[in-house]
Length: 432
Image 1 (spheres, rainbow, N blue to C red):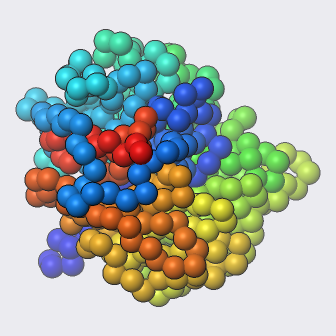
Image 2 (image 1 turned 90 degrees about the vertical axis):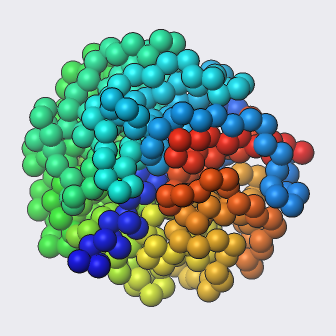
């Protein structure tokens, strides 16, 4: 049916999702490395400075490009002079390491089977934690491999080991969270909605079940990635699942709160923003957006209260996500659209919107030094000022050889802009 095909097309950027703050992976060289999904703090914001404020016609200078990565929509992680990503090749789905200076392949380790559909390939981004790399394949295989060699240390499988399932037909799309001694992921099972595993051995630390939260959405994992909140004075893992937002106490896997209204029953995708005592989330498919306020109850638990809810006519983010800068949320609005917007997070007041922008389709958004990097699924890369007063397009260029939707999130590291485009990786100099 026509709707099914459209829904399938527009939702396959399922790991191209959005994130929040307080990540444990803030490395000493945070300005250089981008060790996981959406950067050192999982908020989509680079700490780089002295970057170009506009680009020449045709875009910034391309330093080099690499090919042979395979099909897929994974972004890249960068750490220790290496680049890590995932791709579907002949023989399976692989996590891949490249030399950071020239893109030469260093190793490739098979994760599982290929994701063979019209827009196939993996959606998750590897997470680098010192000597180890963690990645999740579309069949739900979580693998831990050595950073230096790609040698597999251990693996778990979401459906087989945890009774995991997805909320809809698209496959697993999560980017794993490493937090201290553990890796935390979302199988979506009835008794193991979220699990914490020993990052060295892969053995269980705890399994968290999620109770009935309401009728909106569907059971199972969604297409988002976990972020850490200390809202209400308690450390917790916040995730957008098939039935909506959930919070799991980090210390022991205790379910603390859930919020059902923001869920749709097709695909919940954009990863939440967490800031102080607040959680912001938005989904597409005619759903909307919400700001929750967290408060401790004095017993080591936290409650969540809806501060405001925005209808889809005001704001819905299908995928591509959003970033928070100085109290203002920037991103693309509209189902399968990337219409730029600026929203006052505290009040839910739209500061500006209703501009088309430089490209078409959903927009994956990253930020650095007060500038927004909008990557549209049409293949347009745009530089936009993070200006709460008005939309301010500075420059744009077209990414080469775009055939499938251009969904992989842009990465900024060490004065460079990294754009994964299916089988290829393009690296541009954006340092002044």
